[in-house]
Each structure stands twice: as structure tokens, then as C-alpha cells.
Length: 276
Length: 360
Image (cartoon, rainbow over all chains, first blue to last red; front, top):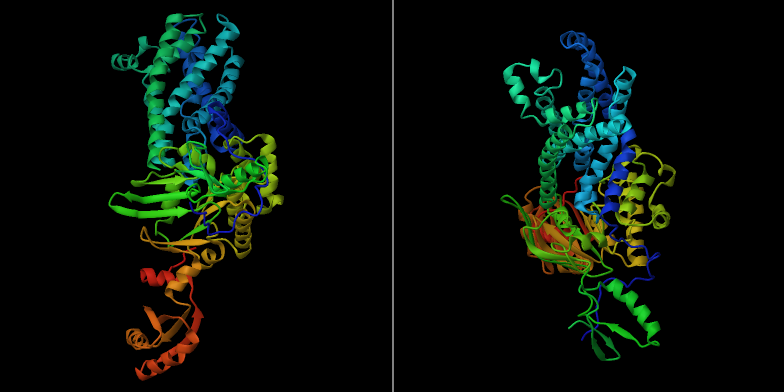
């Protein structure tokens, strides 16, 4: 055996500290990523403010335009309550940290994260935790406005309100898979913004503004295939009482969207990690 | 067999399923000495494992070969420099070794862990500062370091300790300012500090001083020296600055068009070319000048670059007059004739036929 011959001089003193990296565990990883995303939320007001204002604006304008018409057609019909879920869905659909993810990809911060021991899936799940908080922040003013103009959850109470809000957040979370998938696949901010186009068929080819009975046949037929229809019906059912069938269909429809979108997102994440 | 030799008696030992870098062995050595009443242990060459090792590393992008058949062996505690022009493949090698890019073929280990199959362990062992400071402009400097510590599982106390230790790199007056307000130099130094937060065994620096002002460059150089001398940290850096490679590294690998064309200590590499270089700047016909200089006894490696002809020699002072005579006899108009010590640029010219064009 021969002695080691090492070209550089040997270390002159031991490390100043014994501090070393260690795996912190999956949930801690998710919390770390969420921590950063939540810190940045208040610094990203230029994207959040429009998302706060637009649903409130459409909520007020739509009610102003159609409430009397709806009330004349169906006496006693509460169009404000009918519209509240639409306003919530408008607030939460398409809002996510996907834009900040694509900025991270462009400026190299995402590479920094990939070189840390953070669990790969935590990179997306942490952002989604922040998204859930964002959805609640965006939906709350809409809900408050709804209460202010007389919408009532008298039949289901506080629990109904909670389920209503969670439904909105659940939909928002399911939908985020699309912009995240686009962000990870393209690394292009413009492409991520274009994911908002998906919002239109989801929102307009459904019972957002009028019930199926008063639609033309072709539009009514399409609404049966739109998962948003079932999500809106589930949320609207909470104004009238606990309807397990409506809630179950809603959860199932949103889950299908979520499964599809999140599968795309996590496949895109794997693809980006693999490509390097 | 991997083992420790105790006063000539070899003890076969499998310490862990992975191989242990030398720095770790030296820590073990200190502990063992106390525990064994001063019995000396020799770290054997079989036991000491390279901090970075790569065999036939290759990466292609479609038909483009970015890195081809690169073999590397960087010992623990060594500062190894990859020298080459832009596009030589330096960053691609770093990205592969840091698990950021997959290799098309080949095998590599970092800190004793296989880059392909033990990526998680590799990432725990390395710190990386890439060519473009990868920072979030909306975070403050302090937040950047705190988050970096959290990503590596450090406690709040450990993060606070490490922030104090990396403070010399930083402009502490600006630590609570958003990174977007930092100058380029401040960003690079913050990036380096972030890479050091978890006390990595192996530090990768991809062109750490490119674009930096002289003061920031000096700070980074000092820090690199300190990390290596005081902590024994293995440092793998890429650079296009010859003086940086010369000043900081123990060994240099010269990379050109994806191929490792030369490797050795800066002194060894320069010695291969010659102790001195005679440089003749000529008015016209450098080829004729090169032919004349080649005929001079004691001259080797004559290279033409533009209107400059350089020739290596063991002793510049003794041949320069002969070179002047040869050029004069050949009728070559000489604008300037000088002698200088060999630089890594000469080595690069000798190996590749081109000079490194530095791009800021």
C-alpha cells in the first residue's frame, strides 16, 4: 500500500462549524417552498390586484344587467345567489404561482432549487399550498360582497359557507395543473398567460349565467359535458340545503379535472428535471 | 481492498457503503488517534477517493456534441480549474456533475456518490454558484440566505451561525434590501454566500468572477482561497480568465470544443510549452517570420496568431538575439520583439491553435 499523494496542501484547520446539510423531510420541503411563495404574495400585487377587482366587477355588472330579467321570468328567483359561485370561480380560475414559477425558470432560481436536496414534488406542492391561500384571499372579498347584497346561506349555515369556499379553492387547485404544466414544459411567460384561454370554454359553455332550461338546445347539450357545470351546481346547492348528490357530482367533476391537469403538471415537472 | 494501515498492519474495513472523501478521513483520523492512544494511522491511497471523478463524460444536444469523453479526477481539498473559452463545454460539465443535466453517456461521482443514481446525496454534499447568479430579485439578501438554509435542512440557530460566517462575502448594510437593488458584484457574492450556507464538501463555481469589478473579484478570490486553505473545501471552478486559473487552482484542465485537451498544475502545463516565450510582432508576412524563427536553435512550438509570432524556449534571454538576427536575415520587418514568461494562454494556444477570447 502506498501513502496518498495529494497535490494541494492539507487542510490547516477543521471546519469552523459542524453544520452540514441534511434531508429535512417531505413536509418540511413543502413548507419551505410554500414559505417563499407566501412571502412573495404581498410583493406581487400587480398580478393579484386585477384578480381581486375583475370578479367583483363582473359580479356587480352581471347582477345589474340580468337580475330583473331573471326575477321577472321566475318570480322569487335569487339571481345574486345564482351568480355568487360564478364570481368565486372567476376569482380563482387561472390564478396561481405558475407565473412566478416561469420567472424562476427564466432567471435560474428554479435551477438553484433543483440543486438542493428538496423533494422534486415538493417544488410544485409548495406552490400549490400558497395557491390555496391565494384562492381564499381572492374569494373572500367576493363572498363579503355577496353577503353585503343579501346572499344568504340560511339552509347550511357557517359550515355551508366553509364548504362553498373550499369548493372554490378545490376547483382553483385542480385548474392550476394546466398553467403549471405549460410553465414547466415551455419556460415561457407568454405561454403561461395564454393558459387563461382555457378559462373561457370552462366558464362560458356552462350554466354560469342562465339555467339549462332557458338555453338553446346546443348550448344546453354542451353543458352536460362541462365539469364546471357540476361544480357550480354543487356550490349553488349550498344555498338551498345539503344535497349529497349535487355535492358528490361536483366533487367528482372537479376531481377529474384535477387528475388530468395535475398529471400533466407533474409529468412536465419530471420532464424538466430529466431534461436538465 | 479499501483499508486503514496501522503501523504497517492493514485492517480491512468497510466503513460505509459509499467511499469517504479525504476530508472526512482526516476527521476520522483525528478521532481515532485520541481513541487509540496515539497510534498513527496512514491514510492509504486505496482509501482516499476522489471528491470528483468522471469517466468518459459525454453530453450531446441533437447532433451537437457539447462535451465529449471527459475524464476527471479531483482530489479532496483540491482547487481544480476548468479553463476554456465560451462554448467550450465548461458549464455543461458543471451542470452534469451537479445533477442539473443528465449525461448522454459516461459515469461520474461527486463526494463519493454516483451522480446518476445517488443524486439526492450528491445534492446534500455540494454547493453551486452558477454562471448567472440565480437569485430572486423580490427577496432580500437575508431572506435568500435563510431560505437557502431551510432548503438544506438547517435549524434556525444553524442558519444564524452560517449567516455570520458568510458575512465577509456580503455587504451587510444591504442585507435587508431586495436583491433586485443589488449591483452585479453584490449579486454574485450573495450567490456564492448562498452556495456556502450548508458548508458543502464540494463547491462548484461556474465562472465566479465573470463580469465582476476588480474589488468584487478580489473578494471572491480571497474567499475561494480561505475556503480551501482553512476548511479544506474541494473547489471546482470554471473560468475563462487565465490569471484566475493561475492564481487559484492547484490543477487546471483545458477544455476546448468539449474535449479535455490538457491537464496538470499550471507550472506543469507551462513547462510543457517552455519557460519563456519570445514574441515577435511583425509588419507583414508572419508565416515567413515563423519559418525564420523555427530555424533558430533552442526554439520550439512556433505559433502564429494574427501578426504576432510566438515561440517557446527554455531560456529567452539566450536566444532572443539569434531570433532578431534570423528575422533580419529573412527580411522580416519587426515592430516589436519581446520575452515574457509562459502563460496559460500560451498553453491554450499550443494545445488548440487559438487564444482564449474573453467575453464579459
